[in-house]
Amino acid sequence: MGSIRADGIQAGRLTPADYEANFSDIHAPLSKHEAIVESERCYFCHDAPCQTACPTSIDIPLFIREIATGNDLGAAETILSANIMGGMCARVCPTETLCEEACVREHAEGKPVKIGLLQRHATDELMASGKQPFKRAPSTGKKVAVIGGGPAGLACAHKLAELGHAVTIFESKDKLGGLNEYGIAAYKSTHDFAQREVDFILSIGGIEVKTKHALGCNIDIGVLRKEFDAVFVGVGLSGVNKLGLEGEESLSGVIDAVHYIAELRQAKDLSKLPVGRNVVVIGGGMTAIDAAVQSKKLGAENVTVVYRRGQPDMKASAYEQEVAQTNGVTLKTFAQPAALLGEGGKVSAVRFDETDHVSGRLTTTGGHYTLPADMVLTAIGQLFVPDGLGGADALALEAGRIKVDAERRTSVKGIWAGGDCVADGQDLTVAAVEDGKQAALSIHHALNS
Ligand SMILES: Cc1cc2nc3c(=O)[nH]c(=O)nc-3n(C[C@H](O)[C@H](O)[C@H](O)COP(=O)(O)OP(=O)(O)OC[C@H]3O[C@@H](n4cnc5c(N)ncnc54)[C@H](O)[C@@H]3O)c2cc1C
Ligand code: SF4
Image (cartoon, rainbow, N blue to C red; front, side):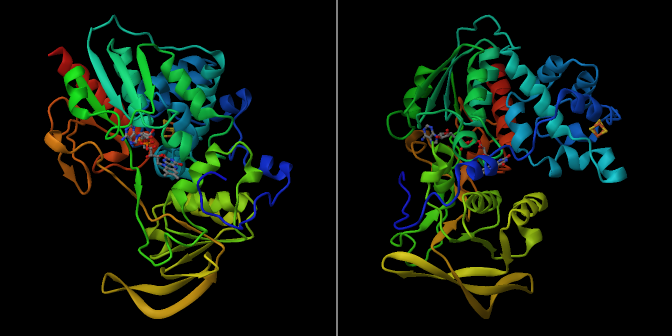
């Protein structure tokens, strides 16, 4: 299938009913009655800590009160005015480390108000109504180019369109949505939600979309700067880190996890997607966990995530780790890959060196073990690829990503940036949306002064 190297790896390990069940919504949505009952658990706190913990500062007590009084569409408008991707964020935010961790009911009784599910309830009601609650301001006559149609670019485009500017999104792929479309685990975003949300965002009007337009290929940032009044760069991270081991490029079955997940998300028929019998996933972040859980859900027999440090150091939250374990994934810590072993051009096992923290440094201990593997998914981090941002218009970088100030202005006048491609990013959908929104407000201010 597609472009993954999986010679001889079996597909169709499950029945159609198994695929259907395994890839259905991980959390069932609340019914109207359940939403009202849950909303009544909220204390409607003054200076609400949940709101402070939300990167987009959604007025959580207000929207929960609106749900409690039966005003679901008003609640949705409250959410979306702060976060236009409130529907996707309700599905993918690690609420257990953001708003719900901060909820006073979490501290008092270990049972936070289900803010994420309430947010989903309100935004789903609005999307089902077909209404677009935001109106465009009269045209300002200004034009803004947005490069990259992921969460950062879409949030920026929507806010600029609302403020009356004419926006053109240049997107390299043939669909908008970024990792919402190609990366988020399939069981978090079901029934083509990512594309439905894109359609909702574009329905405000004033946004032209040019897909298959890639910065560094058929568009040039210098030209865009001349043709548009402002430019926003939200190109995410298009590279991945390599293990640096022999066989990584040549052995079939060694696949980068982001690529594998993208194939899974675009698969029309999951029974056609090859998945190993013994899958080894290398890494400790959300991508590693999502790749592991989805491999298990595709019918792999043994799935092991191997991470070089301890469980508390993993970038995947404790909740994500628990999801992996309850889905039958084995987590092994304190080991790093030392060699990829192969037979007949296909991967057959991975040898690991055991590690430990010694005097604050991670070192190998001399111990090692080998895990059989017919599929190895590598998930050791993504990289910013500065294609098309060099030359006379070079943007300053910091720690390998674009340097921006608090308003998301880059080092080059007239160019803003946000989302995963900027330094200090949190690599979360909600943080990318906030970047896009803040950049749009800053662009609006600059174009009006
Ligand atoms: C596997 C995986 C699972 C994840 N799961 C979660 C999760 O559960 N919850 C969560 O909060 N976050 C999750 N994240 C992180 C989240 O998806 C990102 O933080 C978020 O998508 C960043 O948005 P962005 O707009 O900056 O970048 P992206 O979503 O990457 O969008 C960038 C867009 O720019 C386009 N582009 C790239 N290069 C060019 C170019 N040269 N010219 C034009 N267009 C270009 C891309 O095609 C893409 O559409 C996950 C990430 C991965 C990889
Ligand atoms: S902290 Fe919890 S109880 Fe207080 S407003 Fe937020 S959701 Fe409601």
